[in-house]
Length: 183
Image 1 (tube, rainbow, N blue to C red):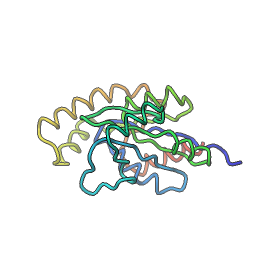
Image 2 (cartoon, helix red, strand yellow):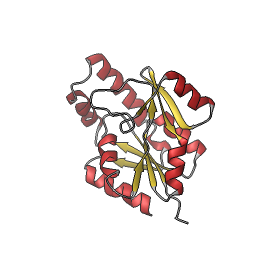
Image 3 (cartoon, rainbow, N blue to C red):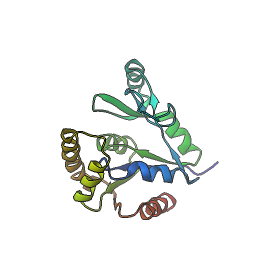
Image 4 (cartoon, rainbow, N blue to C red):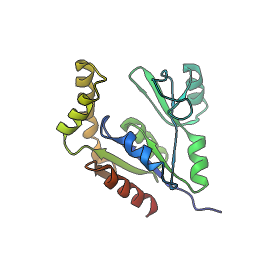
């Protein structure tokens, strides 16, 4: 029987680089990325089953009522959640699983799976985070202000995590995460 894998939760404010890091991390054979379910519509370039599992509100309600979600949250008018079965299956096969989720979801995972490795990713500075969010050019000034307010409250939650990594260089964060998973 193979050794059980480790569950790693990566959280932090929007714009800090979580998606970039996870996309590189899952290139490693040491990690399995859990694809979340969401009730929002796909964005340009997103693929069902790869970016997210895009499902109806009713299907999401069914997942909740049948206790099939490890965690779920409502954010910006849509719901997002991590399905238990794929995570448990990957862990039981010895794969390490990484969840890229926001803080409320991370708290739910820690409550139900206390063995999870909880990692908070911080920007080198708040000014750099602001620059990253603004340079995306995808949001109105009002939306940018709301995202920055949310980022401030999310940064305040860093002390709830076992590990806090500063994203100076993606490669350094990847090395640290691989080290945590293999220790």
